[in-house]
Image (cartoon, rainbow, N blue to C red):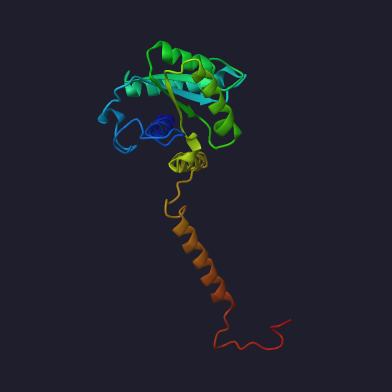
Length: 218
């Protein structure tokens, strides 16, 4: 399941890099991006591209290392076609400025920065773009692009659903029960509600052998 979530995340990042960010013009690929297709099927851009995935940053080393590991997997996925770097907005290094300079040092002419945030809040929409601009000012010959945050993609619901489904599966396994998938679905819940309503009507509807009278109302 962890591998599936990682692949979902990588699809979102790659989709963002295809042209949905805050830069004008066409995306890095001429063809529309389809997350079901490997990025290797698309034509590589003519200019060397650097990708910086930026999270908030934490005082906990384990949290920062998690982003590093995700970038390692992403780096392997693109197989050297792009230069992939992790960066933290604050509280930890490498910073956005460090990662940007590293991309330039490796010959990148385009640097795409992806805010690894769920919502378009102040960090994703203001703070990170300002940090990118400050870094870009030192290398004006380099094109900088900031994508939409991770949570802007509707495919994030796939991760949410997969996480919830995994939790329910583990809970059912620990309690020794295995429930019918239909029973846990929306239509299953509707059917159950209808059955309860029908059962209630059967117990309250008068029969021909019993006519309601004043005593029944008491």
